[in-house]
Structure formats: C-alpha cells, structure tokens
Image 1: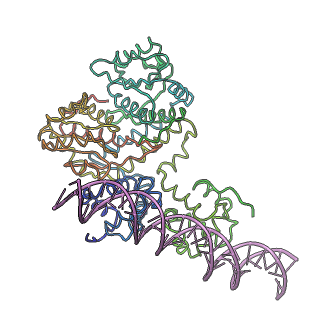
Image 2: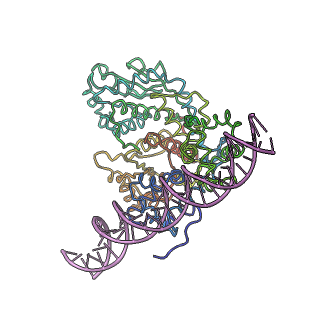
Image 3: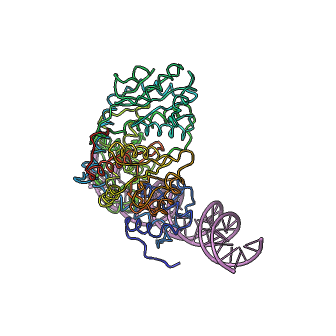
Length: 276
Length: 276
DNA sequence: TTCTAAATGAAATAAATATTCCAATTATAG
DNA sequence: CTATAATTGGAATATTTATTTCATTTAGAA
C-alpha cells in the first residue's frame, strides 16, 4: 500500500474519511466511526482507554493511524488535541455565535426555546412528586405508555428508553384503532405513563379513563393543573414547555422521560449497560 | 507534612489556590499561575511540555501536585482533563440552582447534554447545506420520513410537524413489515428525509437503498461522514449529539427538524397558522 | 473446496512520560 | 555571619503508554 501524506488537521482527516472511509476493513471502519463520534475523548484519553471503549486492541488504533500515513496513533491523536485547542472560543465560550438568518437562525430559536423549557422545568418540577412517580413506576409490573398527537414521539421514546434499560413497557400506539384493547389489559399492579399537553388529545384522555376504571395507577406528564390528566392521575408532573415559531418544544419532556427511565432502572438495580 | 484531601474537581482546586496560593514558595506560585492561565494546555500536554513552557523542571510539577495531596502530577492533570470534557454550561449553571441529587439531578444532566448538543450542532451544521436541504424538501411533492429505533420518535415528530404546516409527508413506520412497500411508491419528484445515528439501524439503511434505486432525492440527518447515510444521500446534515448516563440526546435533532419544517413552509408561502 | 492474502488479537518490546532521589542552592532564624 | 531548614534543579529510576511482532482468524480468489 502506498503511504499517503497524512492529513494535517482534523478537517482534512474528516474529509479523507468521507472519500476513503468506505474502503476500510470492518474493524477499522468501527474505529473511524468511534473516533468521529467522540473527538473530545480521543484528545483526552490514552490509546488503551479509547481502544477499550471501542472494543478493539490498542494495536488496531496504531494500524488505523498508519493506514492514513501517520507514524503511529500518537500522531493522529495530536490532530484531535489541536482541534480542542483551536476551538476554545467557538466551542465553549460564553457567548455563542448565533446565526442571524436563514434556517440555522430558526434552529437557534428552537434551541433557545428548549433552554427556556429546561429552566422553567427546574422551577415547576416538584422533586418529591418526581420521586413518588419513580417509586410507582419501579413497582409496576408493566408500564403502559400513552401519548397521542404531538406528544406521541415522546411516548415512543419513553417506550424505547424503558426497553433499552430492561424495563417492561408497552407503547399504546392505538394502531388499527385498538388503543382501548391495548390498555384494557392493564391492572393495579401495572402503571400508566401518560403524556399530554394543551390541547389535550381526546384519544389520550379516553384511554386513561379506561385505565382508571381498571384501577391502574396513573402517572401523568402534563402542563398544568387544569389538564384533564391532572385530575385523573395519582401523580402528575408539571412541565410547561416554551415555544418558538408556534411550535412548542419537547426537549424538557424528553429530558424528564430519560431521567425517569434511568431512575427507575437504578432503583430496580438492573441497569443494563445498553441505552445510547 | 500533613497530607490534605486533594480537591475533587477543577473549581475546588481553584478555590483552594485562592486561599492557600499566597503561602506557596516562589516557584510553585509561578506554577499555580501558569496552570490557571492556560488550563486547556494543562489538559492536553505532557508534564515535560508544560514544565518547559513554565520554565521549571518536571519534578517541580510533581511536587506542586503533591503539596495539594495528589499522588503525582497525573492525578492533578486529570482534573484539568475532566474540566475540558464537561459541557460548557456546566460552569455557569453551577451558579444557577442545580438539583444535587435524585431524579431531578438526572434531569439536569440531560438538560446539559441537550445544551451541549445545541452548541456542537452550531459548529457542525453547514448553513449552505441546510439551505440546500430546505430547497430540496420544498420542491418535493411528498416527503417520506424514514427513521428507526432510537431515531423513530424524531421521524414521527417530523411527520407531525410537516403535517401541521400543511406539507404532505408520509411517515414510513414499517408497520406490519411493510416498510419497503411504503417507500417504494416514492419517485424522483418526491424526497426522503432519513434520520439515523450510530449504531445505524439496518432497517433505515435498507429502506434508503430502495429510495436510491427509485432515484428519489435523499436528505439525511446523521452523525458523521462515516455514516452509511452520508454516502447514500444527496445532501446530509451533520449533527453530533452529546450523551449523558449513556443516553444520547435527541434535542438538536428535534430542533433541526422543527427548523427545516418551518423553513420549508415559509418557502412554500403557505405557512398555516396551526402547528404548536 | 483449497489456497492465498488480508485483517485481527494478544503478547512482547520499545518508547515516552512521570516520579523519586539526591546534591546544590536559596532563604530564614539565631 | 553561621547554621539549619526549605526549596529547587537535574539525573536516575520506575511506571505507564505506544508500538511492533507474530500467531490466529477471516475473507476472497482460483
């Protein structure tokens, strides 16, 4: 194999991967992906630590570097270190370079809305109620996740997160109009996690009525006291999201779902190392 | 010499220096100043390089560290490395009322990860490519949204957002194993919006192959050049999300989806006031 | 299938890096 | 000043970390 000139900086390296990356053997491709996914870690860790995380031998890292013309892994790593040095003010400075126009400006707007949501959530979330919710979910045999309309993605994610952590959860997706059938198998030893915000999807409201008739404990994530979920649920967690361009953020909802999942897994003491 | 407990993080160390710093001997005082002046360099360089820059012997660095209760310089250095790993918001938000324990602390962790994702996204997102993506989506008769596994909630949300804005979109939900059937109706006058991150769900990869065979333009949201989506797509947008407790954030993905939706709606000039 | 080349894992070795030790210097108290 | 303790520099050593080598596995061609 011809020994090419090694890339001179991180962007060069990335560009090279874009072209040549596909030709790499299986393991080296994994390495490439991993290095690009966590460039900061590459800069700050030793070859042994990195290779361990990726699940390859240190020698594989050295070989990987040599394929691109470096003498060894250390030379490649110095690209990652320089990258971290060069970005000090762009990357982690206090004032973020905001985009001023176009679609990326919209992106910034939504990012800010997310931030605002987080701050609001810190204020409105009652830690005690959250812990009670965790306790209830921990005791549940099966967690039924109910969410419709705009909240459906959050529900889908909750089901995913629970599953990834080895927690038995069912997403009530109402497919084929079978929502009622899906939730009707719930019992007092299970739990419902219901997610709904203004305007409360009538499907969700209808479904939790059934759960209530079954005496299944209901944990709700909703936006305020006046929510139909607040009165129906045993515990409800208040989360008021900010909006931008007439789209309400879902970021705090997602963060809360992740927090609940991990907390339940911890409490059950079966935290599988999976997730991601 | 009494061996004190070494500081646990960078801020601890800084605080300790504020109190004890003046009592240090001349050379060690120089060291303290230098380390605080360029903390990034301390994280990224070797003891020899640092000592050279300061103009002292490497052994002085070791002794310096030991004065503060560390076993050697390496232990002190790891504080500087951790500092660099932390999210930029970590520093500031320390002041803000952070929850210190329990599930709400987890919530804060995920909120910070989301923030870091936003910052990273600002760096990696190429405004030009974003605008091209918007243009492509604007021209599409129907937008097919493809996302599986962890990314599925994002896809579901994209379909929702497009719909709410009056943009014809189909969520390829692969129900009943009909994913291929669903996407097979796509044609060059449509567009695919594919979302996938490490580890790339094979379903998604398979589906976009079909779209490619149909010559349907593909717009991808993925995490790096090595992604199978990057090579298959006409345009791909790079988005590397941060993670916490081994769960990767989705916040930047959601923000980008919202931004794209709104931008397309604007461009089509049919922005219905609905959404939320 | 069999053969050959390529790729990988694991251990051995080399290189680098950090730490300790001791002699030389500087500061401080008497 | 002198004596003593504290601090520092520099070389020697120990430790960690990267790299090379070689045996084994895997993939590809004939």
